[in-house]
Amino acid sequence: MNRIDKTFRRLRELNRKALITYITAGDPDLDATMERVLTLESCGADIIELGVPFSDPVADGPTIQRSAERALCAGVTLRKMVAFMKDVRKRSAVPIVFMTYYNPILRYGEEAFVSDAASAGVDGLIVPDLPVEEAGNLIKICRAKGVCTIFLVAPTSTDDRMKKIAAASRGFIYYVSMTGITGAKLTPEGQFGEHISRLKQLSDKPVAVGFGISTPDDARRMAGTADGVIVGSAIVKKFNEDPGSVPDFIKKLREAV
Image (spheres, rainbow, N blue to C red):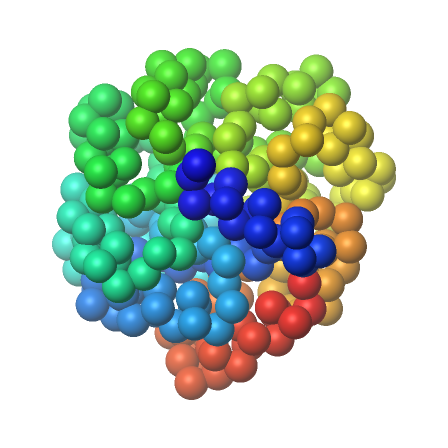
């Protein structure tokens, strides 16, 4: 069983929700990323997303865009991140998901990337610019290697589309709380709770909510409806502006969810 599946099963038994944290790998360098991963894990993160730096991160707001620029300037690539994961696995067993745009995977080669990533200890993959309709080959390869494919549901997704996404997703389904980019103020759209409830009726897979969650109060609100809460930009910002505040912030998020 994949580490992500084990984590959600354990949390269900404890009647707890998952805290999923995001940082950009290589910001400011991979040595710092290692320490940040260990800090997040020790303070209560159940799953960690590692962002792959990319030159055109269309789903991301200014905070993550700048972190990606710093990582690119440090020379971080997808291949270097795969090698880095081997070192992470010597020190941590926390479930780790790579969040990357499709271009680096295409350049690496789908088969080679998934094989190398699985061997290095990557548990899941989020590719926000790859529609589920175009992801058939990648899904097939990931399933063969035991890597979870995690797809995004938007507030505008129809029931038919949610069914497709749920069928293609493994580990958890990523529910985007609002249309827009990461780091924006949390403003859940329309019938937010009802929409997630419909999604959960269509699938028994865990649903984690991300985008715009920046405070423990935000996290608490989202945890009332979802199985997990994803926090990214707020953590990236704190690591770069006030790193000493991060452990307490993560612990408060953990308590909130």
